[in-house]
Image (cartoon, rainbow, N blue to C red; front, side, top):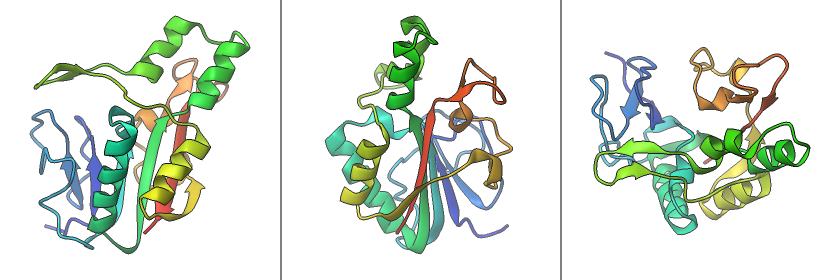
Length: 183
């Protein structure tokens, strides 16, 4: 079995393969852990930590602590790749009446079942400058956008590929803010 050098945190039912740590709170068969802090992973051992539409479930204080923990798990030169709902795009679509409030509630507030509390909701929203600030506060550098079409896991249609209208990837508007940064 290959050494696990990448982590998909909040993976849900998606299995990226044997080189990946799969982490989620729900009990899927392919999971390696349910610990979002990756305590089972040695410091400086990962080349990539990927989290698609995960960090918005943590408040501004919690997220910096979480990202600093992931920073420790990455080797120097490793990449943190994030996707979050893009508040600037969502607000723009609402302002120009291309999206109704009801269409935006899911991306803005989230609502996923949680074993402990019943449901989890988003505690934060991000635009590019807010996410860049959180990444910088957590020790990351060289912050840049990433394109789901050119990453190795882009064949999996996850929330990093969220468009409005839904699934209109050629004609719609990407509503996911996809940023990555280096350790």
